[in-house]
Length: 84
Image 1 (cartoon, one colour):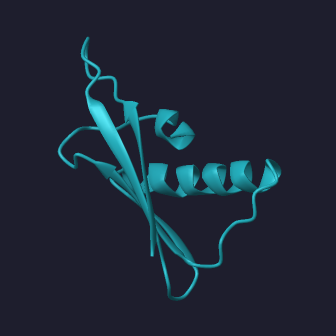
Image 2 (spheres, rainbow, N blue to C red; image 1 turned 120 degrees about the horizontal axis):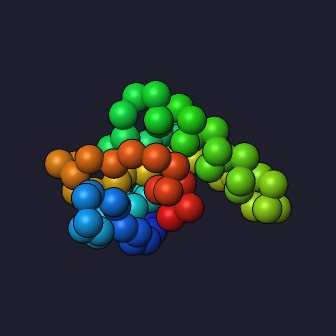
Image 3 (tube, helix red, strand yellow; image 1 turned 180 degrees about the vertical axis):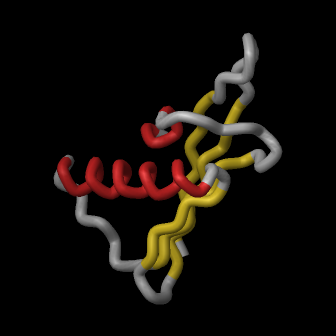
């Protein structure tokens, strides 16, 4: 199983708390799931990330991909997390 972590910042008032974007690639049926965003934002974000990877020439892996945005208690809005 491969595992990658990147970091970005959230906008909460005048603060910018750290958000960890954790992405394991696991064996199993191919799937792409995002955890830590509201339901509507997950669908839109999933489509944008998949399109961005394919259009930059990367091959989308045929494995189980789960993207976790941590910490869970921090409100996350907007598409800024797609870049991480």
